Length: 609
Ligand code: AGP
Image 1: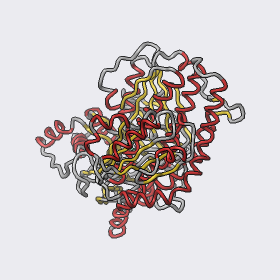
Image 2: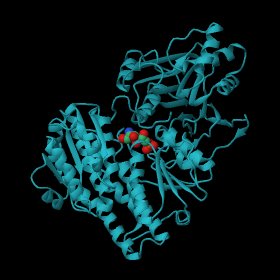
Image 3: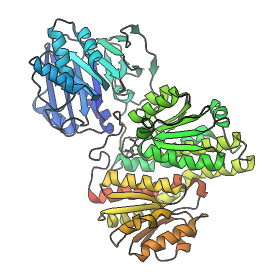
Image 4: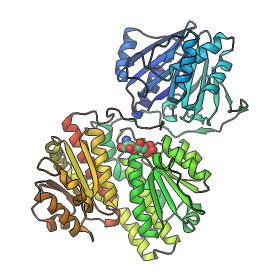
């Protein structure tokens, strides 16, 4: 999703702006641009496509200036063209925007009636003309910005610079994240602390409704009532070094391979390996879950599938009633929240607009809110009552991999803790479950030796137009996650189904061209899943069985291909089976030659609804 940077600086701004934008690339974008003040005039350079294209533009037409703004745009209103790329500008103001201005049509009509001429199809441009109009009426820049923001509805983060006002950058936040960076001689605005890390680690996050004014290094923040306020300055842990691919071809490949380490790191936060018990460093969560009347789990995309797997765990291990729904539905469907209920939200970025809105709604309805997040300074982390961190590290590939398995690690530990607290799990069972969880990283390392098998299979299956994924119990949500992973990076149509649902409809799709990926550890339901496999194979379907040695032996020779994985406690199988599923999607995408890390149309952090 769009990324913003603003610099009230003392040195050449253009290289700094581009460096910061490079750190925001992971969010997903399809055009980019920067604007600076050159001898008091607004100058800008923009380009459709990736930053390398903007680099080329800057080589041909370098840009000076020390005060500037920059933007990576993920198109919402209007195609990713140069004229729609940010910054948008008039002779008086240049502006970058993340989010959606909902009342842009009304404002645009009024401004056109006043003689303003629009050059783009974006909602953003309306803010430029609004500020210009207010400046033309005689308002000073900061007042014009504040008045314009007052007139905008929707969710946005904005940063603007003004012709003739060297060193002045004004920002505003409503709904979309915006951070302020405090330097010694400069000040900055950025969509996240990661963008600001090369310049400063002293960062404050704006609240909704805040307007911030940077005058060189001086920072003033005003709340939605226009009152001066202080926002807590934190030292961020974001690394100044660019996260690199460490020799891998893609961030996604690197992140798949990091899983043994980051899962172990996340489990280490929640488990005591000597006593084989869950040891929460957030003890208040135990009381909350002990007395919970119901647990509502919500998230978007991959994080939601982690939540669905969590639902199986909380029900089975803690006998806790769970409702799970995607945040974009939960927030609008007027759910009935019970007294004493707990609502748990899961997010890698901690900025997903729908998840944040659902959290706010649950909180307002009296639920105790828990957030499982990867970015500790994010909006969701700051607004939840209890935060349970994942330790995946920065996830750059748009397709979530290591964040997903770290989310599962936290949910598994939490479900065991809830089971203990609610008297469902005896100490012996807890020891056994914790021991099984602790073995997962080692089993993933062991599975990695199968990578070449998966690579070859990926090349073979990449010709498919449709792919089905089947799983039962905890592996059903993983089947849906597998399908999501494949479609988002390879653009192959894929669906995940509960294995038992096949004959209720999807089996009609089966022919020799449709690979069916079956996720089936040798567990209590294995025989039933094998029957579903047989039904598929009888109709010419190409079954690819992901199972342990016992499962592959029991299924016989019939599968088109097998992906063997180590035997694990079936309760936690999704933590291991996620890896072959991700790897297969990766190698199918690689064979198709798609942009694996930044697939078309997708954004890493979805800060609009
Ligand atoms: C995963 O591969 C996706 N790109 C996407 O579904 C993602 O999981 C979803 O947008 C939620 O993001 P979050 O975890 O940052 O809230």
